[in-house]
Image (cartoon, rainbow, N blue to C red; front, side, top):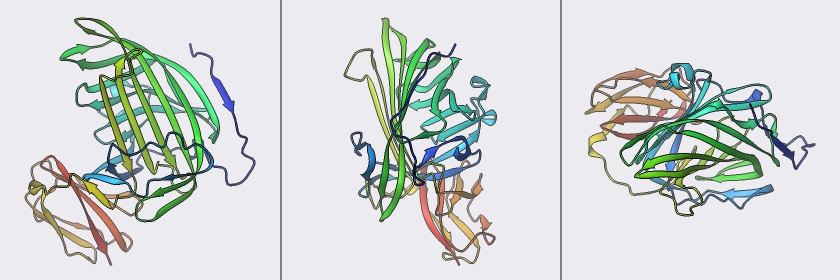
Length: 347
C-alpha cells in the first residue's frame, strides 16, 4: 500500500511567468531530440537554487563529439515490455537508461528502469510491489515531496547473477527557476530545474551478503513554454555499501540539447568516415562510405526533432528531403560501433 506522501509547497505561483510540470505538458510518445554527450567533470551546480538564478553551461565541453538520442517510446513495444506490463511510456536516453512510467492527472508513476552500467551490465529495477511517484502534478518551483517504493532488481555483480528484493525512497523537487546558458550564445529564460534523488536499498551476495544502495541524482532543465523535453540533463549514479562514503561504482552522464563548441578526446574514427552530397541540397541527398550491415542514419531538425530515418544505410543510398522546410539539419550516422553527426543545408 502506498505510504504517506509529504508534499510541501514552499512558493505559491501567482504570476503569469511561473513554469510548472503538469500532465498537459508531459512529453508524448514519438517525441525525441538529439543530445550531445558532455564531459563528466561538468559542474552539477547543485547549490544554485531558488528564484532568478543563472546556470551557466555556456562553456560546456563535449566528449569525443558523441551524441545520444533522448526519446519517448511506447512501453508496450520495447524489448523490456514484459518486465513493465503496466507502463505506457518510456523516457529513453540512448545506451544509458530507459525509465518506464504511466501518468494520471495528479502524478507520474515509475514502474522501474533499465540502466546500462559497464560493471553491472543491464541493471533492471522493477517497482511492481509499490510504484515510485516521480512527479506530483502540478509541480512548480519550491514544491517538494518524498515517496517510498519497492520491487525487485536483476543484475550481475562481480560475475554473479543477482535478483534481490529492494526498497527505496525518492526525494523530488523543483529547486530553481531562472536562466540557463548553453553553448553558442543560447540563452533560455524562465527555465525550471527538476531534481530527483533516488536511493534504492538491497543486498548482494559476494562471499558474504552485503547491504548495498544505488543512489541516482538527476537534474533536468525545462523550458516548458517552448519544449516539453529537457534541454539539459545531468545524472550521477553511485553503487555503494550502505553507509559508505566511497562508491564501489560511480558513473556521471551529462547531455545537452546544444552542441558544445569544444571537445575533449577527439580522434579521427576512420571506420566511420562518410560523405553526404550535394551539400547544400535542393532536397535529395546521397551517402558515400563504407557502411557495415547494421549502419543507420537519423536526421534531425534544429530543434532536435527526428524528421527522417534510414534503418539500413548502404553506400550510394539516396533520400528525398524535399518536403522539409529549408534550413540546417543534422545527420547522425551509426556505423562500425561509432556515431558521427554532420550538418546539411536544404535550400
